[in-house]
Each structure stands twice: as structure tokens, then as C-alpha cells.
Amino acid sequence: ISRPAAMSSCNFEELLGPTLLIGEGQEVYTKDLLKDKKNFVMLYFSAQWCPPCRKFTPLLGEAYTAHKQYIQEHNIQTEEDIEVIFVSLDSIQADFDTYRSKMPFYSVPFANLWLLNIKDKLSKGYGVRSIPTLVILNGQDGSVITKNGKGEYATYFKGEYE
Image 1 (spheres, rainbow, N blue to C red):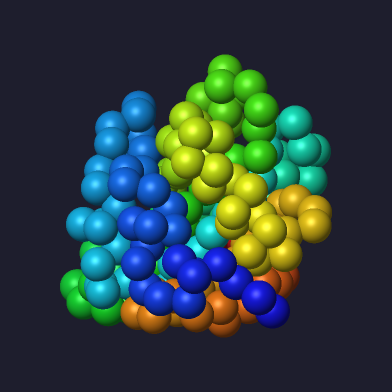
Image 2 (tube, rainbow, N blue to C red; image 1 turned 45 degrees about the vertical axis):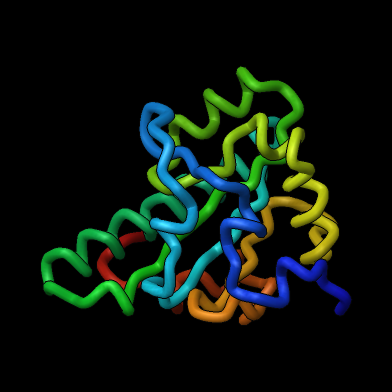
């Protein structure tokens, strides 16, 4: 597979943009969040208008939350950590905001998806043909572990969830 140059290195800031959103829209610097401390970085391609996405998002969110709780309760080092990054395929900011507000994980800001061409660069670079798609990357070097993360995500997350 041919990947853009940014995807062949571990420069997540170049790949995802300078900032990511969490919670009520608080921005965090991508380089601080993902600097050589995550075991896996999962790129979640989804959209509010997609019924299968709306079914899968709560499952992924529950697994993510349970994993974070498990790590905290068991005092596990950050090397065991996973980060999920929502890459929206929504074309309307209000849909993006509503959908993102239901997610416990980080997201690429809506404006950056379009202004920095991140949505197209990532979708094409990882061969996303349908959604929901979960691409699992090695958190250290950015290499693709699997593009079938939707079918395999439960093997990566620890903790109790359905």
C-alpha cells in the first residue's frame, strides 16, 4: 500500500494536525498526547449520518472507557495505553459536534479535517472505503497493525465491557 510520507514516520502531529479535541471541545496538542507513550493509536473513521456507525460508536466508547478505568485501577504504565482518534466524515459542523459529544475519545477538529485536508489524506492513505472503519496503528512508529479494528478491537482493550 502506498501511504503519504507523513504516515511512514511517527509524526502524529503531521498526520492528525496540531490539536485534537476532547470533552466539551477542549483542545490538546497532538504532539503532547501521542508522544511515544501509547501502545496503540486507533483512527476511528465514522459519521453521524451513518446508521452502522451510530451502532458501533457506543461499543467502542464503552471499551475505551473500561480500558482507561482498568489502567487507572491497576496502576499500569502509560506504555500499555491506547488512544482512539475520531476522524469524522461528516460534512456539517453541527452534526460533527453532536456526534462527537457522545464520544469519550479525542477527535480531529472539524475545521482541520477540511482546511488541512486531513479527512481526505487519512481516508485515502488508509484505504477507507466504508464506515465505520477502525485502523489500528503502532503507537511508537505509526505502522499499520490492522485495518480491521472494528472486528478486532476487543482483543486490544482491557477491562470489563459488553
